[in-house]
Image 1 (spheres, protein in one colour):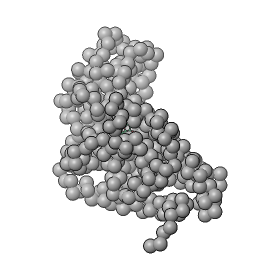
Image 2: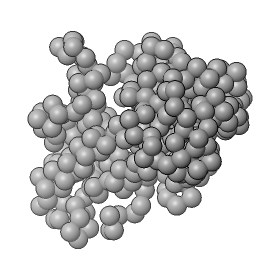
Image 3: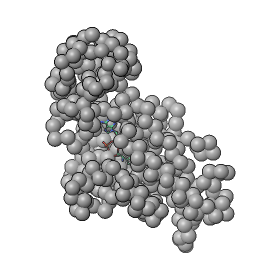
Image 4: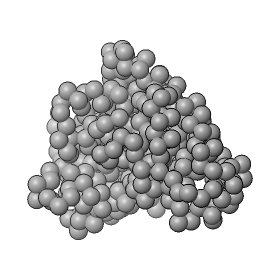
Length: 349
Ligand code: AMP
Ligand code: TRP
């Protein structure tokens, strides 16, 4: 990706409380990347309304997700934190990309198929075009690195396809204006970064299903707002198998629940799964779960506490989002002006 300034962009939807999957799969990565990259972290409220959201709940969720970012360690001074709808370039570039991306590309998106379910005719057009908006989020800042969980990989591939097609379709205009860098086009091809400590956290009730906000059972996930008591109960009730823990990673094969709990322990402690199994190999789940409860409460309860403290002052959160939107717009606006010129729009004011 040489030739482009290294810049990180990522986002989460304010559709409900964040959970351990969001934390280990994405947020911990976001926090670490602040040391090495310029980082932009977005609360993607425009993505949220691709499915129905109660307006009052949406406002609450936008502030709650912002509080979760900060409580988990994203620093609003070092990084840009803002909500998508306050920077109009996202909608503008998404429209251009609606005209670059092909129907055939979107038809392959598995997340749309999952979310639309059986009643596809009744899904919103926004849900279908969602990946184009996501590509716009990233490319509006010419971001080069995108830390996400594994489930977003396909959307990142689409983002690269859109960037490449735009660079090709408008190659002459880009070259004429000196806006491409050597071999590279106008937009970088962003790299997905999926190396979080636990890129795929599974449900506590079923080790073959992703931990998800849409699971009907609250016992399937640990929410970032859960207090110590709730965290402990959910881990104690988590599904396991009757065997003791193996002492090597290959012993986890075919044992999805065991693998998931070991992965969660590894993610929270910063150790590898191998190291966790060296320590707990041969133990029964009861002993391992007790250690996991202690670790999870130690790491997660302070985040919930900090979120509560931040949410008690919504004005302060809104100020952070406003300042972040100004900083984001300062990067986005000149890029959007170039895009409009490249595609042939006239600007006369
Ligand atoms: P979502 O809550 O689906 O909008 O996801 C927000 C971010 O968290 C994305 O980067 C996802 O890939 C990540 N994520 C969501 N669920 C999980 C999970 N169960 N395991 C790992 N990462 C996840
Ligand atoms: N689609 C992502 C998710 O559901 C959220 C998202 C929207 C995003 N725009 C993004 C993630 C840009 C990374 C970069 O989790």
